[in-house]
Length: 327
Image 1: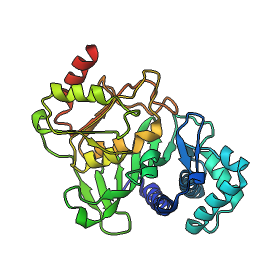
Image 2 (image 1 turned 90 degrees about the horizontal axis):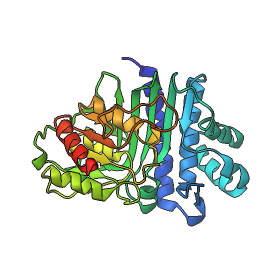
Image 3 (image 1 turned 90 degrees about the vertical axis):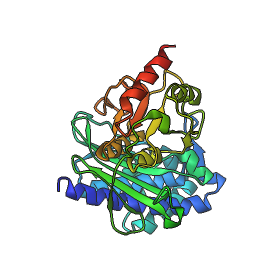
């Protein structure tokens, strides 16, 4: 199997980060959350998750670049917050001292040659969902020559089966290029291959979108749905769990048009999830039918809008998007 060693490291790191995040979500206090310059929240779990994942990657692949969402500036200035993060990290990695933790977090903010091999990490995708006690994901992807070749999603609160909540929750989804997409329980168990669903008529479909209205244009999504004859209400869910439910057949369409033309999608928000959908048999493009380009830097500068589908519906949805946006 290609990238066997990379996959083993990635899955182990994401599982450890997921365990850290699960613990924090049940005990998080207000003083353990801070606001970044863009006013988005970041928690002690974001920092701890990034330290664990990057630490594992650097140990095994010391020459690989890692592009992470966070840096350690806040922790270097706040000794109390730093102490809390290091305590959490130490529970998952006893060998990591506080200074190494800070260095590993900052490693994700270093300059990167995006034309070469690199990893990209969102230590907690969907922080607002995480803070509400809802869905979030730890998302890690390996990129070579601008193309994702490996993706892992840790989804601690996602049910193992959309149609049978009694099966429990906590999923680890992963994929390797040309080898399919798989899901296994986060706490351990057998993996099974996952596939997008086979709905072929838009009138029988439904779509998922972000919970937060500030994250995407719900009104535009609604107009697209109406044009397609979609009558079912949207499934609103935080984070790259949206990609997860599309990949395993729970939803046939994921729409995302960000609010504000100046906003550029971050690579770590889409690399792992979009790749898993494609390996599950689906299709992912922007609203102009362009492939997502991960070779340009930390943002998807040439892509506007995100459309993920089961593939069968993609062209029809793109046509509706074109008509709605032209108005």
